[in-house]
Every structure is written in structure tokens, then in C-alpha cells.
Image 1 (cartoon, rainbow, N blue to C red):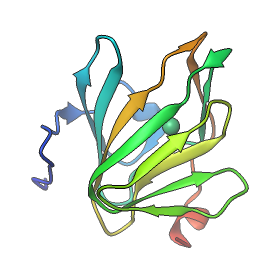
Image 2 (image 1 turned 120 degrees about the vertical axis):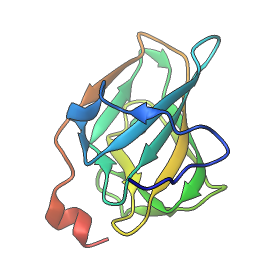
Image 3 (image 1 turned 90 degrees about the vertical axis):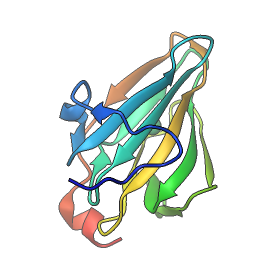
Image 4 (image 1 turned 30 degrees about the vertical axis):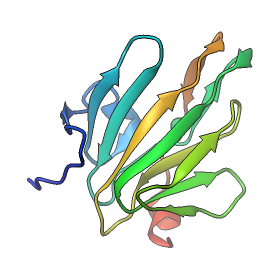
Length: 134
Ligand code: MN
């Protein structure tokens, strides 16, 4: 197993959400008070399923990229390459996925923007054919 990590401890395998990921990821909750902030680390080729951060008011997610190289893609748009220092503002109700490049580990902090009725909807995996074109 690689020792890839950032300034934030990597934490253990992300078993709680493994069913919504392709490949192995790691999750370390850095903050569970005031604002939920998780350090998510993806092994090469690992990505989460298409998903939507729903909310009746407010909500969404902010990704703060901390290590490696990865991708963010909104439904119907080209994928955006992510490198350390990049920030992604994900509005509520936008279908998207995020994860590592196929040849690189990737880590981001996931900041959950508070919202009324905030909830995540997990959808289909990002297909290999689509992913491997990146
Ligand atoms: Mn997301």
C-alpha cells in the first residue's frame, strides 16, 4: 500500500461510503462541529459515483485540493483537471463526480456547505470507458 498523504492525516479506508466509490478511498473527518470537513484521499483510478448535493436552501460542497492530481466533472460538461491549491465550488442540485487521475493519487478536503434539508443523492458509477478517456 502506498504511503501517500498530505499535511492532513489520511485516515482509514472509507468503508462507510465504499459502495458509492469505484476503487479504494480513505476518509478522515477533520471537523464534525460547526462545519463538516473531511479529508478524502483517492488511490489512482478511484473516483466517486455521480452524485448530487441536494438542499432546499443553501447547501452544496467545496473541494480544497491538497495533493496529487484528480478530476471534477459536472454532468454535460468536460472534466476539469485538479491540482493542489485548486478550489471547486459545487452548487447544490448539480450532478457531478470527483476523484483521482488514473495514474495518480489525489486528495481533497470536502467542505459540506450547510443547508436546509441538505442530503446527498448517490447515482450511477462513472463508467470505465468514459473515465479512461480522461
Ligand atoms: Mn460532491
